[in-house]
Image (cartoon, rainbow, N blue to C red; front, side, top):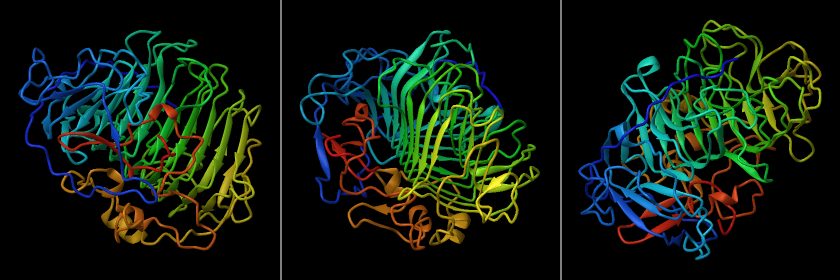
Length: 532
């Protein structure tokens, strides 16, 4: 397996400030207020015709870049338009984090300065063609980007990554509290990722902590020649060992992320990669995502037995379908959900209430390895790893097409485990997705969200007002219809309810909209706990 090594350049910004696009398809919460007022500490503005010598305090005096002295709780409002990546890199860290006033309840608790697109999701567009690094690249702590789209005309070695946190400044750089919310990445080397450039295997080393990708879309966004996933957290480093969630991937859509020519490995929709590189001890959550038509596994958790670490992973309410679509590198047995642990360290994984359905027996293209709904294992056996798969009331829905078993399987050969790992207690049946024909024929291209939608979940078909999905949409097509599937797999947003794994450090920012006078935190992007 690979570790990435890239040399990344700082980026600059060129924006065009124009009339604010009309907000359409704003979805209202069920059983709760549709929106909550967000009181920023300060509001600033960015523009393509702006200047960093301007005050930035009005649309008539906008900044050109976000690199200014700001505080957590500040919001920088950017106009819709086409942007160059030459200034979208942020290198200055906001002050006074977290905020101690304002926000959604007057008590602060906001961990970010937010760069907010003023319009429908993706109305602020950055071209990721012909450069290096991330088109939106975060090189400092305490930043969030919301409502942006990055795409490119080129891909592979001549393209860029989309939304990246770059901790490559030194072998001890730790960047923390970065969030990408309600964003879209298409036709890129990588959609959303962290990068520590494989500078060392030290503890704590360099890397990223407290990282979130929430309610975002990654489509055709894993074409980096070094082999990656579309949404990827690689080799995080510890800011601290505090309890609670440190990495959160929730409510995302990983669509048709194919890199068939990758010579080494990977090609997943979502991956947590080599968390032992710096002895990481944080908790990672992969919750409520839809992943389909990836080159290789839909979701992978992978470690390499480098440094002692004891992270915890919560993987639940995810829907995976028709991954392992097309890869030319030689692979053995794998799965829609692929967990490869060497077992030397006390990692804890809880995998429950997911749905994974294969549509093939072997990996597409030239790979030829057998495909299961889930594959677990590790070179050194289970060792001190604790892995809980399903269980009473928490069963995953797994269904594959294999008619034989490569190692240890359930009686129907739907899931496989190697080297002492187990298959868990699950339900092995076809979930009866509503319309997979439409999904693979019509829902694999780059989505157009900017013309009509203020959030990605609505763009994927969800009407939060009626609590229904539009026919022939991603969410509708992957709605399970078989008995026993209620509450399993992806759950669209509704009224607020408890979720112990939703990070409190995302309070107030999921997701923001500006109406020309006031800022609001809306419901309808992802399921949230009340008060956050």
